[in-house]
Length: 428
Image 1 (cartoon, rainbow, N blue to C red):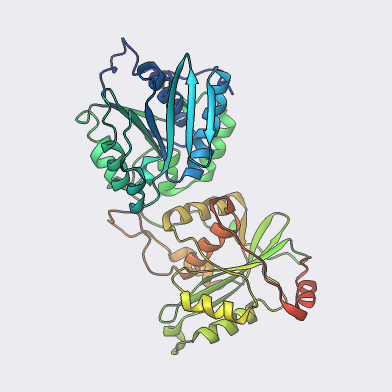
Image 2: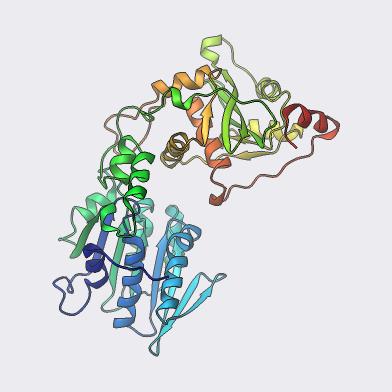
């Protein structure tokens, strides 16, 4: 893998550490900006070239939110490029280590995931000559600071890249706003800084996002989310469910006793998913609460004539999941509940036509028009109002459309009723 050309900003990123560069005395570099702006690959290549220019026999760290995402986004394309450049690349998957050799020098690069606060313990004890943080804004501060503390080898340097987030984010306040104070070079990237992107591809990305996500991922701005969460939602996202047969079927559940319970039945036809039916029970509106068993009975009624492959449920609803398992009718799994990332994924799915809402799902459509961001919040968060169908849609999209994140579902036999239910739903 060899890039045909680099932009001026990419060349600056590749060479800032070289002798004679006006920034060679900096302790690190920070790159932020739009998605697909060419910063990640250039930074990883620059990091390795710098490491081999300055060290031999040292240890370095490559970090991402998870090791899996780090390998996918950074390590795989980097290894291909380095092999083409004459490096010997040894990848130990079991040890999460890259051993690189070139020009008689050998250096080791350890892979770490900074998923949560507990990740800081994973990097304790190691001595590093440098560390690269891929998507640093997704990592907890404790992990980043622990990794920086491991860089005690003379001449060690720090490398950061990320897409923008809320302007109250700790990394924006403590590093980007204080880049000179931290003795770091700061480079801001746009899609125009990536010469491999054609105008057509740039326009496609511009259509993928809206609101704060557009300003962040396309404009490269650190802005707060405000107003409607899905401002683009319109009649184009509402479509009648086509008749069977269907390619797949699933259910998503946001459980509630005092708060509303919202379940969605989803079917797949011609590559698109349709929210064909919904169950929405508001105990305040109805004047009485329902038990787990009553909600389960509603789930059975919702899926009558269908055979869902899995049911994904609000991860805090342990008792309801146990109720479903006890009956042995459905394969149930706790949903992924990363709210902001989930909202972004739902936005992508709606705008790309991967999901549609049947006009009969009135409560879901009502919530789309009322779901808004919390004003003045230091961290992106939607208001905890009119969010129950919105939550179950997030759970569905995370489960059905993004299985590379670790989701796994197993189908459970349904006994003698199974053939009839499958025939009725048109799923074979």
